[in-house]
Image 1 (tube, rainbow, N blue to C red):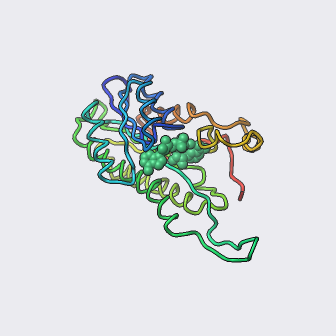
Image 2: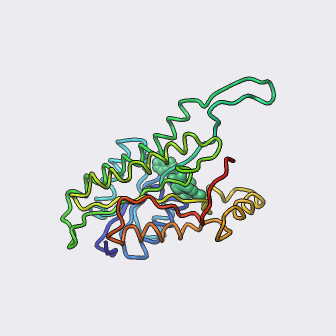
Image 3: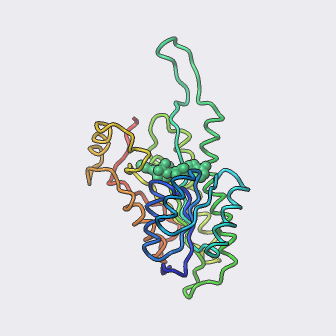
Length: 260
Ligand SMILES: NC(=O)c1ccc[n+]([C@@H]2O[C@H](COP(=O)([O-])OP(=O)(O)OC[C@H]3O[C@@H](n4cnc5c(N)ncnc54)[C@H](O)[C@@H]3O)[C@@H](O)[C@H]2O)c1
């Protein structure tokens, strides 16, 4: 898809990190960008900076996502691009024994379900509602109606201790990429997923320097954290390159995560 000022995009999680970088990169190509995020303050700031629209959206809520698409489409028209970056994590062992008193506990099921609802169901909710909107558009000259990029994680393939829920949620995003691409193939909508390694986002900004140094050293090459603009570069390639479809691509400096 040729990106320009005739194209509208929605970026979930666009108030911060990988999503904010992608919102900026799309804007630099002339695209009209709407940001969906829980964080109103940061989201408004990014939207103001890029001349876009902020929609306070919780991806776990049908009503909230519907209202977000209504606001975005009223401002920019039906989006041809959706980038899903909204997500979060938790770290809890499946079952564990307390070092203090030997008591045994397991991963609380509500915490497991909470993360699946955000990272997996939230991503699917935005895809399904955005794709339904894209079906109302005329195809572009090459038959394309839209392009969707999702964010999984290398934890979909090599999840660490404590990441059962996170890896399940991201593995779900990887697993649904091809069938969704197949569901939408006759309508000219492409779907791809990025599996980021360790990126320098607000998620990690608070970590002590020695932790950041150790994480950087664990990357084969280049020996540093990924930059959000490098994520955005791949997201834009997936959108712009018309033959990119149904792919799950690691972007990780060749890292393979250790058990912990
Ligand atoms: N940073 C990394 O190293 C890394 C690695 C692998 C995968 N990822 C994934 O990339 C995505 C972006 O992460 P990031 O590092 O930019 O983190 P981030 O915290 O900077 O950005 C995530 C954004 O998602 C928003 N969000 C969270 N829950 C939401 C909800 N229910 N509804 C709407 N918005 C919600 C947050 O408010 C935040 O602005 C996440 O899905 C994360 O799992 C990040």
